Image (cartoon, rainbow, N blue to C red; front, side, top):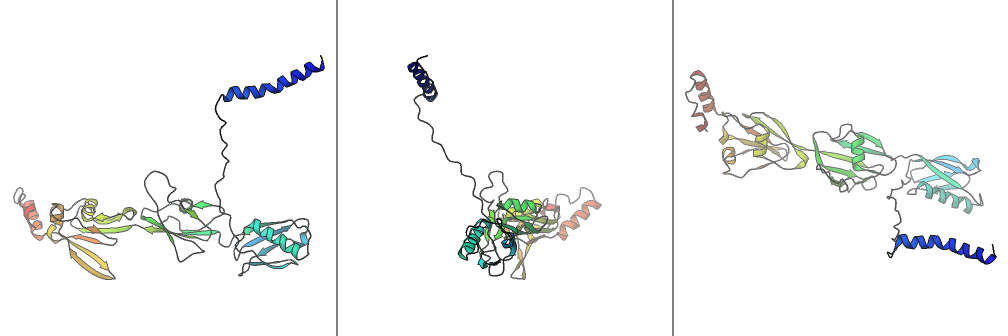
Length: 312
């Protein structure tokens, strides 16, 4: 084969992939590549009380386990004290390398730092969770992760969750945790080591007296609960109830107050339905006259049955 023929074959082979790409792409412009961005993770910062494992490559006499003191400093072998508070492990390693070079201890040090213990690595979860306590936190986690670690919320949990950051204890963040299906992004906020989570208690309203099922009823998710709703939860009033003498018992600033409730008018939609608050007691008394008529009906079946409901 002549030299010119060989060159021609090689050029032809090289042109085939280019031609194939043009056929596959057609006349469309090549798609722009979108760089992948991994989700941001908050690196844990060193603070007072943390235990660091300092490893200086090929220099065991300078390697050590160091406890960060109250001022956020560690005392390096030979090189003295160095502040590492607020640094990540990687940044602390770089700072120690700089100190070793600056102090003429080593010309080209290679340092790695590992945090063996975080003094503030625990997150305290309190309030209406099944297992309150301190839970370790390494890496980035959301609010729901910590509530789940504490066994989840109790049946008495409210909607409000307070997060107190250890570096800003005077400004707690209030998060309203939704109960409806859908995205949890809005309330699954970031939690940091040393934070305190307080799951609120849902309000309770008590309905007692001449009702179908007296008891305490939750104001679920910190929403409102009205007189009519409370009566419905208590399975309604009995026929011997004195609807005109119902009352609301409420404590205001530690003082107990009794407020008349026009229950008969509320049930008849002739008065506004009133909103109840946490700790309220709705008392529906019995009517002596209705009880007497009930006893008469029991003694004389058919007598006074129709008149019971006309007694206030």
